Image 1 (tube, each protein chain N blue to C red):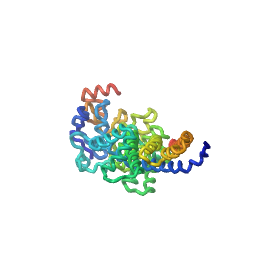
Image 2 (image 1 turned 180 degrees about the vertical axis):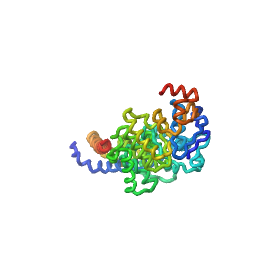
Image 3 (image 1 turned 90 degrees about the horizontal axis):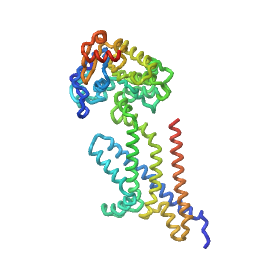
Image 4 (image 1 turned 45 degrees about the vertical axis):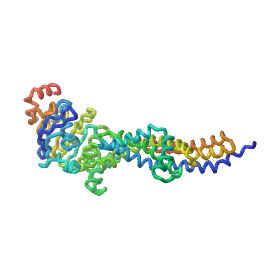
Length: 215
Length: 240
């Protein structure tokens, strides 16, 4: 059997990679919004808000992501009464998951800022929210960068689970190719290289940012 | 100007303030001293509601500031506070630390706020440090910036919470010198301090706190020469 040149796989794999990046990016952005809301609920004085945020986060962290993905994919249509495309269900599942993880990163980042900072802001006459916005958040954000990069890489890798519900992301694209020609190892190697390259870019970016801050 | 009436503060089952009465008149300098754990800092923090008193009244210009509808943020603009650990904003330059309040809260133009800040920095002896980050400053310099930051709001009164307790001994003097200059200008102040000779020198009155109450309040000369309460006598014998 003649082997196909490996570069012939590239267009299909890059197409899949594009979906992977798209879902990862959306999950990080939408997850940040969800995570911020959850984090603010956790640091708020409302016991109800705290309990809701905490239960949600612990539920998401306690269930296998694959189960969550299947739940959303099969469960949401039952709830809404309409079929939803796999890519939408997949993005929702990844967002709900990433949001819970990010909320912990945000909360830890905010709580890592010394209480004296809040007190100094309040003592000048800033409201609680102004103090958060002008004094606490800017300090917290810089400290979160390594954890954010780490979460990005987790979300990126976990999007491969979406292949199970048929999202044509990078892993699925690979599977589609080798299920037809059985060039399994070479295809998987290429898939792996692409994941790793995306990861490397984000890692370098994070290091560069960290270095800029510590200067 | 500031009057505390029977202020109490409880943390759960722990009663830290058991009915504190203190009056600070305009241009008064009241030094609050006493053993650690006596409630000095907690009481001071009740005066601008950084700590919410459990009971009692705190009047500012005759108005009860503990009322839930009282605009406490606006009160704090009129009452500056300096902390033991400075609490400068590390992500901002010295200049931005000082101008943040004036620009955002007093709606001063950036130029006017910077002019004000430069003036204050000159006053605390740090005219050349405006563009430095706080982490480049010594403890004494940080505290002087913190004082300038509080003064930038042009407060009517200042609260000092152990302003020299976190400083190396050789830096205490420079901070006390700045506070002295405020005394000369007639700033109304409440100062929690462990610097006995300083309290004696600048205080109009000494409030000696012990066990969550003010055990003795008198003029510095009287207090240090002739303390009335046994606890004050015991305290002074340890620290002097």
